[in-house]
Amino acid sequence: MFLANWNPTSTREAVHAAEELDSDLLARCRVGDRMALEQFVRCYERRVFAFLSRSLGLGNQIDDLAQEVFLRAYRNIQKFDPDGPSRLSTWLLSIAVNVAIDVRRRSRTQASAQLANPELKTNDNPEVQLWRQELNTAMARAAAELPPEQRDTFILAEYHQLSVSEIAQVMGTRAATVKTRLFRAKMHLRNTLATLWEATR
Image (tube, rainbow, N blue to C red; front, top):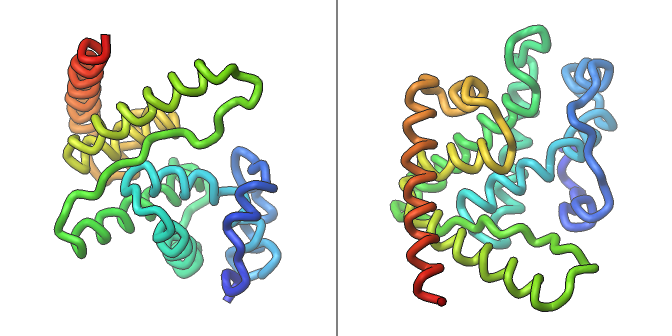
């Protein structure tokens, strides 16, 4: 299997993924080319890891879940239509959403979201870094209170910059439902963060 010797930590640190996999590599993936499949993983793993960790916050388990996403993609890549309306990254995120849903069903408990961005600018002074860490922690706590559908919608919109129509495709719902979930998520986060801000003043 092409993921057998995958080292996600070193790859995440070393690879700067392209926006989308080019058509030649996609064609090679569709016929099972090992090198192309490895490029496929490198191109999209950061986005998959980011979504799963922000949605589920499961620490080391994210490595196994990300691998599950790519295994499902590998098994179904023939079903992806490169001439269709969806980008490959959007199609892959829809698989990641389904994996997250499966995890929630198995656990029967709402997992805490981890929205913090681990990559802080090294040239910031300690006060700025501390402020960012506190803000990220507050965001994570506020997001953990959201219903899973609202949390995933918010993550796809704000962190992956998907459009309303793309989120609807990823989550298998209507654009109007996406807009409602986004509105409610943002209102909750705004109110919660405002309360936290007042409490720290």
